[in-house]
Image 1 (cartoon, protein in one colour):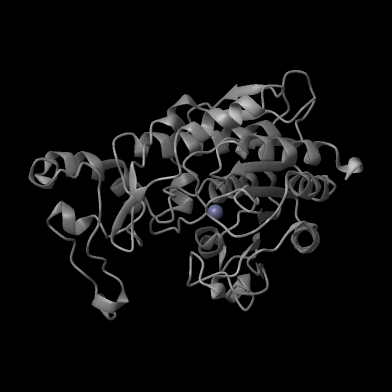
Image 2 (cartoon, rainbow, N blue to C red; image 1 turned 180 degrees about the vertical axis):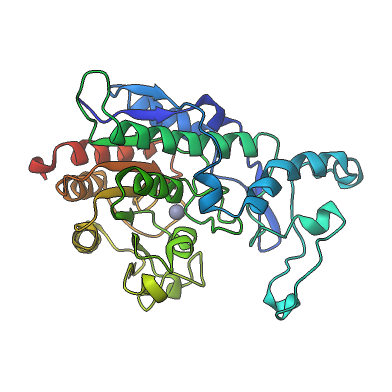
Amino acid sequence: MTIPVVWSPETRRHEPMREVWVGVPTEGTEVPARVDRILEALRAHDAVEATPHDDDVLTRVHDPAYVEHLRTIHAEWIAGPYDQLVGQDRVVPYVFPTPAMTQGMTPTQAAATHGRAGAFCYDTMTLVGPGTWEAARAAVDCALTAVDLVTSRRSSGVETRAAYALCRPPGHHVTSQGYGGSCYLNNAAVAAQALLDASHGRVAVVDLDAHHGNGTQAIFWERDDVRYGSLHVDPAAGWFPHYFGHATETGAGAGEGATRNLPLAEGTGDGPWLEGVRDLAAFAGGADALVVSLGVDAAADDPESPLQVTADGYAAAGALLGSLGLPTVAVQEGGYHLDTIGGLVAAYLDGHDHPAAG
Ligand SMILES: [Zn+2]
């Protein structure tokens, strides 16, 4: 039996069209075709369509005010003058109430939609369009349905040990307060919280995406019930998310020691990358359940990162994490090279399913 694939046609509805990077509109790479390329490569797996879940877990991971903002902001934008006036049908913030502006004071909510657009957002490259909310919310349902599969016995009486959630858009850059990094809702954090609720034990999140999952780290920063370990290109070498992802960040308060970051040099390939995966597998080993933030943008062909991991590397990573024998939900994060993305995901899942072969 192969690892089931949980997906939703709704996840195709988000069309980034463009990102605004250093002030310049560039073509978005987090495109709906990613869903179809991955589905094609996973034809041999059981496909399970996601079932709707309520907002209970979602609003414990994210501030309810943020969730409501994301749900409504595009309709407000379209009701405003922006499309007619400047031809902008995507929500693009231009002012951000960061500490640079607020200096400890509590800001009053902006009256204008274009003012409010930056209230729960931290970059200019993550635009909200028609269908963004529907796709992001469906991705959360994919993650929660995958959790259902590994925590409840199916009618056959056989418990699925691992499930894969084909989440799009990805989520690991989203904090409890807002979005960025082409992510809108933190699917991995939702999965971790739901696994925690189901098993009443401890959960580990291992993040294999090429970029640091600053959002997931932030959400669990002060908690000791969810460990977060990440392997990514070094932000000190100039890579997104720039401000977080350094080895010195280990958590705070009750969460001190529950965060582990392994930044890697540009050009890192399978050998040192798998050493890092081995380290994070040990870090996750004491948990009762595992979430894998399965970004495949660490692969050599990917346009968004300088890491040089191969499909064999991803298969070996799957074998290392699969050998933990934990109930596991693998959540799709990044991966932008359309010709190889599906094969990379398939390689990881095959490795995870056959740990002895690794
Ligand atoms: Zn990434």
